[in-house]
Image (cartoon, rainbow, N blue to C red; front, side, top):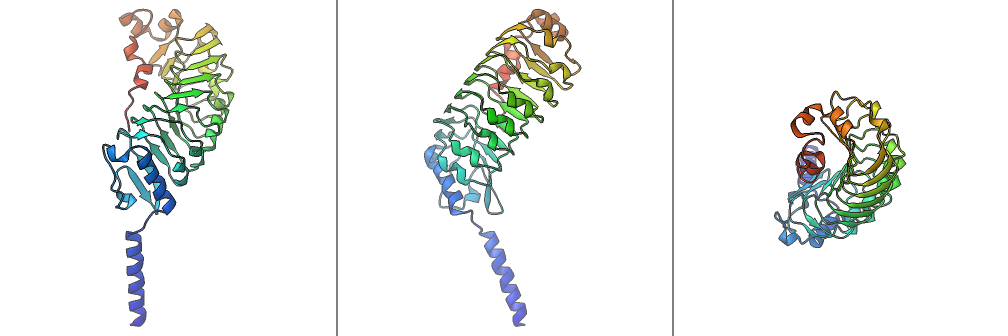
Amino acid sequence: MKLLLFSLNFLFISFFSTLNAQISKSERQALVDIYNSTSGDDWSNSWNLNDQAKTWYGITVEDDHVVAINLHKNNLQGIIPATIKDLRYIEVLNLAFNKITGELPNEIVKLAELRVLKLEMNRIKGPIPKMIGQLINLQELVLFNNMFEGPIPESIGEAQGLEVLNLSSNFLKGSLPISIENLASLKNLELFGNKLSGTIALDLGKLKNLMHLTLAYNNFEGSAPVGLEKLDGLEFVQLQGNKFKSYKSLQDLKIDGLANFDSDDVNLNAKYNPERLNLKGAKGRDSKETRMADTKFEKEN
């Protein structure tokens, strides 16, 4: 009888402990720091800091750890604190469509489990952290419509699980890193509207899964990128607004799934967009219909 009572008490205590499990002090403090540094009292959906963190809006807790923060379009105003590094188990960080300022702290590269980083439509400035490639589990890096500057870090090629890399509409400079060739899982490479320059030396044909390529409105020069003729899944290709002097490498693209092709070569545009040509003229669709315009208004999920 005593053994039975002991077992029942043990089960009750275990159940009660699980029910009231708390995240670690360091993880909770990291969340509080985000709240305080981004004017949490003024958020569209605020937090009651007296409650458990698992009840807070946009927070997902599993096994007593924060695994996701989804605060997109929630009126965050301020900076991302360096203590973000203490959220060591986080897999999804979505702070898109807010008013975040300051720089992206280098400590972000400490989040080894991170799969999705979405910070689009904010006011973040400064460089992309040099060691961003340390996020080897990263699948989506979406930073469009901010004020990032400087080069795309060469380390980006170390994040070999990347499927979406969208850095459009920033102030990035320099050449396209050769290491991008290593991103064999990449589906979307979107760099529209930066200040990138130089010749494109990498072989985009190594990106076997590439579907969307947007390099438009930069300062690339020399020959148009090579390797695209090797790809079967291309849907969007946008190269216009650069200084390419040769388009020889683009003469034999596979067009079965190609829905949109834009360059500064009228003949190529006509070749790959015959239906569009008939409707809109030799230069293709209105700019409002292009993928680059869509980049600025992607869904916030």
